[in-house]
Amino acid sequence: MADLDLDPAVRGLEGRIVHDEVVPARAPWIRRVSRNATLRVVDLEGNQAVDMLIYAADDPAERYSAQDTMAAQRNIFLKVGSVLRSNTGRPMMTITGSTVARHDTIGGACSVESNTLRYGFHTKALHACVENFLLAVMPLGWGKRDLVPNINLFMNVPVEADGTLGIVDGISAPGLSVDLRAEMDVIVLVSNCPQVNNPCNGFNPTPVRMIVAA
Image (cartoon, rainbow, N blue to C red; front, side):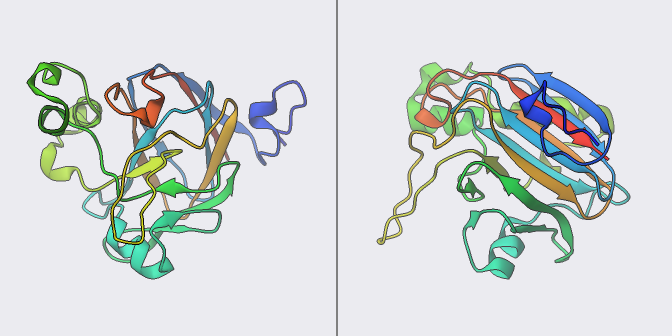
């Protein structure tokens, strides 16, 4: 068991810790997670958005589908019990625990293009999540065509009654976390969001911790 009183970040995780890494602010992360293993993402300093994509390890053409996930659960928010489904409808990962009430799957990933459109041409040189994703998958021979609408862990994207949505101050806090159990062998791709032009990171990107227990 990995229930170590000396480290609250791993408390409650069952199994052996097979990977434990702090991802710096603004950095990408990619790793294969085996079926039945649990990935815990810890927001170390609070108010940090974590953009995530999931691919079937044996066939990366099968990948996370926001639309299939939302349609199957009839909810636009991701919560404990949410099953993250692929573009074939198969379960990829399940949220088995979360100390944050909900996570986003409609806000998308920031990019050079969206930054420029939303915040002005002077932001064009700023690093963004799409670029993080591309840096991580280049060694695999993947490109922009392999990127799809993503999950935003810890990110607060409320939707009003008239359909208006916004990116507002986060609902996370230091040490809060989310657990995702792999329902198949998957490749998990993450951008520890570098956005500084809206409040999704409290205008100050910070590190997160990625722990895999199997």
